[in-house]
Image 1 (tube, rainbow, N blue to C red):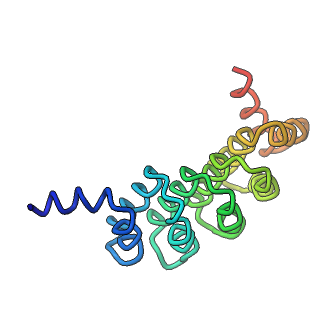
Image 2 (image 1 turned 30 degrees about the horizontal axis):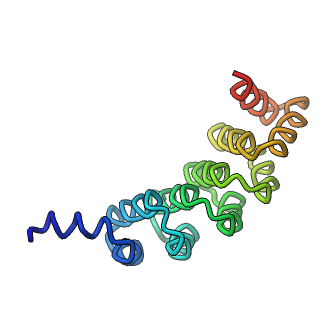
Amino acid sequence: MTTLHHRADAMQDPSALREALRCASSGEQVEAAERLGQLGDVIATGVLESALADEDRPTAVRCAAATALGRIGWTRSCDPLSRVLAHSPDPLLRSATAAALGSIGNPSALPALTAGLASPTAEVRRACATALARLGAEGREWLGVLATGGGMAATDAREALAVLAS
């Protein structure tokens, strides 16, 4: 078999992908995380959560891990995603975690997403507002309350509600 065939086989093998996420190059870690998310590998949530929380990893790897966790949709991943949303200084990572929380759709993410609306970064506020809209009635209710206020969070909440209405 050629190297290309070995690589193609590895991209289908969840255990090989989990191992790549632990110790491969950054680019291969991103690919592994993306593929684990596409496969919906619930067993991978632990290694994905570790990659997400590892502040020494490149942002691209951490964002890919967040996106994969959102695709897998396991509600237990809401806690590590919410922690990163609350504490990371990186707007790209915060946006990715907000989107993942919206994809999971668990109301336990309401506090973290609502707090994220206070971000000074428009991209993070929009991601949080969009994620709140995806949480169902509770999220839309919070957006409605926030939309009646003032400031940047209110504007982003109104925009998210307008998208829902269209």
